Image 1: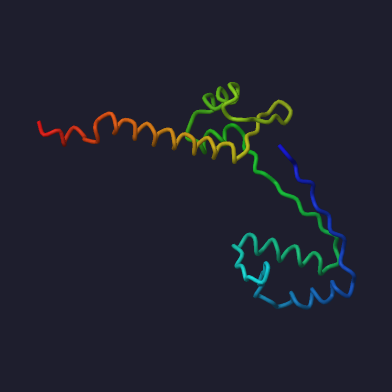
Image 2 (image 1 turned 90 degrees about the horizontal axis):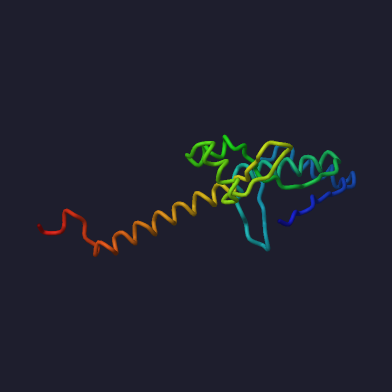
Length: 144
């Protein structure tokens, strides 16, 4: 797994910070342009961008990093709708990747979501195979 190093941006020069602070004061419309195209950010992203700009406007240096949500085995089992013991056994077999924090297992949210998606595809394939074996008819359609 490749880790992306955090990006550190130095504080803005005082005159730029002051201009940004003036622009943010009382403003409610934050518009993002990417290659000349306007993009509306979802509320969480908008709030994060505004917070970043506010920190710059106060003359602060800023570090940007990403955090992947890690779950305890209990949280992951509850999300997946399986028992804690069954989940631990799957991690022991390597079916779901696990990381250790000391002696505690942690599972990435993306790993559980990927496993759930795989289960969904297996069920759909099994149902399709069952329908093909039945010739596409159910018991009520057999005409008997």
